[in-house]
Image 1 (cartoon, rainbow, N blue to C red):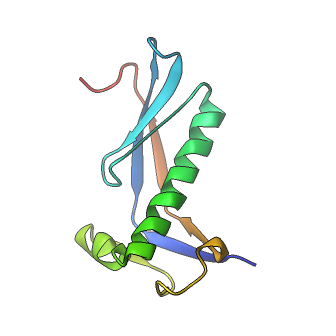
Image 2: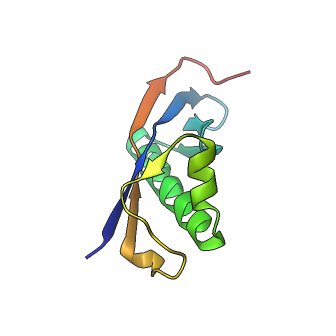
Image 3: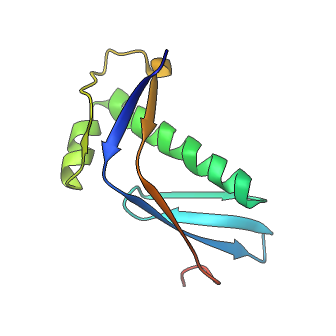
Amino acid sequence: MATVVHIRGEAPWLVWYDQASHHFVGRCDPLSLTASGPSQPELLAEVAESIQLLFADLLEAGDLAAFLHDRGWSQNVPVGADVDLSDLQFTIPTRIDFAEHGPH
């Protein structure tokens, strides 16, 4: 059974439809992430996967605590770098804001 690591923070995503690529594109500045997909459900799946990969990479590199601290965030359970990453599921409250056009 996976251990769920709840990040106490917020990940707001700005989402728009890109006419050139025919994809929905999302950007989250606090996480420095961008994701895209040909449909809204596929974009949301990419958002969830990129959040998981980001926090797993930060944990593996030993940078998760500093990343969270720099943003004033925390986590519900302590996890060390020696944990099996496949046993962890990261979550963070996520807000999706739709825009007519992407940022310029």
